[in-house]
Length: 583
Image 1: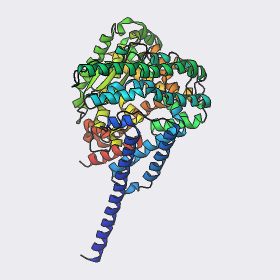
Image 2: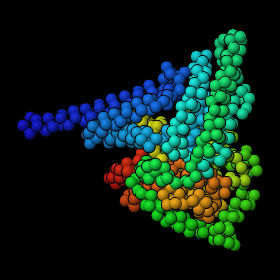
Image 3: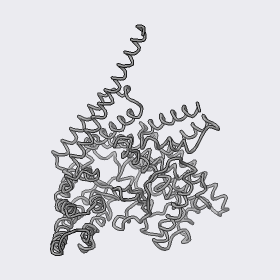
Image 4: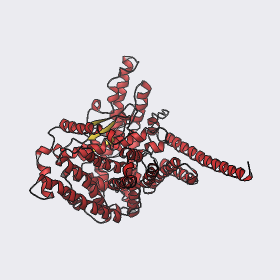
């Protein structure tokens, strides 16, 4: 080998060693971050099959949160010392995703998000209320550990309440208007008999245990005592705090800008949820443009029906005619199940790769349904559980049947269930890639999935098509009302009026949604921003590839890397186009 060849070989060896070194640093850091989370968060450890902390709950003390933040800052600094350009592309994405996760945690601590552990529709008490369904309680040790966790509920709730008192002191509290009736969601956890409580359910049938009847009786007595004296006591304490302290101290205005550092906080949340550097003004203008475009498409549907009246008259007709509403919860659930199954049959036309995990259709739990959104996807907590498409059956006269097809495609397939399940099943990827959820990507995909139903004939009559357009309009209106309320001085009533005028959502749904946007700033912006980007990239691929464009391959490429920021999605599809251009 001549000198040039030797030098070239040395260059290659140096580059290989450098790449291997940087990859090794990343792999080691990812493993240490994962292990730190296992060691720090008992519920996470249990969910990952590590059972040495099955009797514990998270520590929310000031020192614990301070130490966690300091450790995440150290991890973040270490991560940023890795030379990203020396990594393979999939590892570059992994590094970026881990950086994003660490940055979000430190930002949340910096902005004191732990002072306000609730929104208008959800709170830490509901997350803890779901604990029995998240655990596998197969033997006596499992049940003993479970009781130890329940025994710690009062201390855990006290820590949350202490932080909420800090929120009261600093003015970082939810607006009073969104908390009307919120305490009822807490009361539902202690206002029933112990034996009817979900916390007691694991003890109703102990036939799986190989212990004596006397031991079973003793265990049952202990369980009843713990549920009554610890769990119910914790929920009662939180209820009293809400009624006597928190809600009376809630703020009177609704804007995020009125919180201390509210302007910086809102922009931080905009960037987090949209994965862009767009400003509130940018998003507001985009929303107004989208509302005008969709409204014109809605008018075309009305014209085709030869309805005697304008859009607002048609929307009033949809809201008030009983034929558009289910008479029973079972009827609504069957309607949703029908469209779920109908869409299942169309999936092979749209994808080459489908998930293994099944899903079911269930009602939103009664205790949270009154203030809950119209539907949601719930990922499985264990490997023996399905995904769940929740349909809200509360106030049936406010749940129009014509909206069910779009809702189903968004929450089940080809929306959240398909996307989240595929990501979680990518066993070759690190944990941070399989289980991260980026709202602009996931919710953008969900809204795009509603549009896909149009291409495969799911919207089989003009009313269902109007329902789809109304749902798209709903997400476009979010861009306007979220930015309007939090940055432009819009009142809650102005936002309500705007949504009622431009969507076919019921007034109950609109009120629930507006309160959600008030209490959860910027999250609602992610849907339209993400959907528009996916549509833009699809158009780019179609125009560039021409007859080489394969819709199923495009969809697989969108989902191939799990949930990613929109800038990474752009790069992924550019690579997809490049590869398929040369085929």
